[in-house]
Image (cartoon, rainbow, N blue to C red; front, top):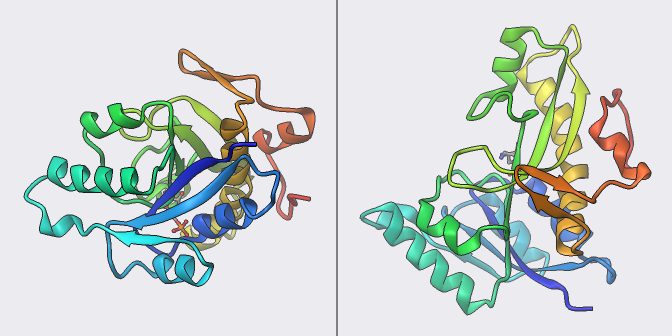
Length: 221
Ligand code: GRF
């Protein structure tokens, strides 16, 4: 089996990165994590990836005159490591259409909301302010428009009376850790196809509960 050589792009703590690395340790997992790349040399996730035995690199966006110059350096690093596929996991830079065109159909992102609701930042605060009862997370293919692109997997969580952004965010994050490895597995194994804005062919019944509202304490087992 050829395993898709995948880079995880991070800017911060890298908890989703941890889950992807752990999932890809299974020999039958269809992707291998060949690189963790950050735009912030001090991202805590880089040290964790290194400790896990993964190659790491940093390309500091602040030293570049513009976004495209930064991306051309990223691209050189990705080519050096012969990367086939990208997972954005808390990567806090927007890409130009040029970069996306290099990776179209080969780049996933995770967003802490049920897209197309709550694109952008501060999703948990905004969900609480709106009084929604269901919130969640989404893994989607990346397109030039921010937080758009065909949806691979979603998980929903309830919003509880006592929630603040922190407790709600933690409940969502636990589900992010479930659906990101699932989505990478589905895409890397070729189990899904994209038709227009829809990703089809994916969900076995055992996975389908992950796209339905899940109670607190739902497990991944
Ligand atoms: C996650 O909430 C993810 O959805 C968002 O950024 C956060 C990254 O967290 N895009 P971590 O670095 O994976 O812990």
